Length: 259
Image 1: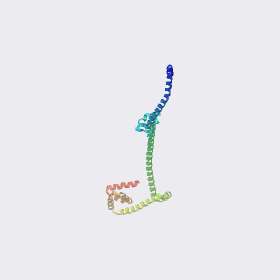
Image 2: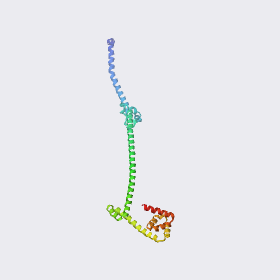
Image 3: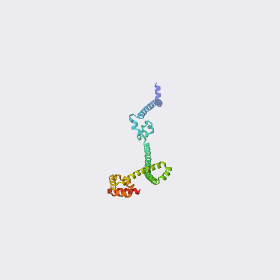
Image 4: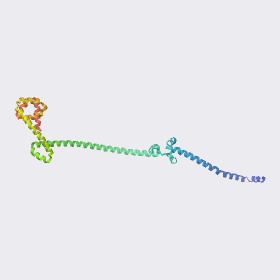
């Protein structure tokens, strides 16, 4: 035993090499478990962080969204936003891009609105002009129809037989209408002739007294009666009438002559 010890004492380097060799054998056995533990811990921490963010526990995802969404390594953990168009859920560059798009779209809509308003004003002006033109046309048409009707009536009265034959070939219905009016006026004229004859047979004073009582309310009838009387008889009656009534009769008779 003494020899062995003496040998070890004589070779101290040999003893150190043996110790180092023993330590080197122990190191891999310690490092691997440590690495495994570290990986597990990191996995637990990462998994916990993912669960907290992805499930928006305690509103963590929304609270840190603006920070995480700009970091690609972490942004994938975020849950889908409730409204992708909400600027709160968009990255800063996307918000800026969206803002520029909205400004451009707003300008386009404003331009379209102005053009539409101009077209509406043009259409309104056109409508007003068309309505004014139509109104004027209707007035002229009504006046023309009235003038034609008056002309036809006058011609028919002057030449009833020839005009009737001519007009029946063109417009039988209008001819019937015109001549119904003519017949009615002829019948009225016959009655007025009878009444005028009665007044002509009466005493001038009595006739004037009756006509005075009829007054201005029946001025047309008085004028018609006097028109069918002899001029001398009519003048004698008018001379005895009330001055105001006589004046109205004279004006009315003048109007009839003008027509």
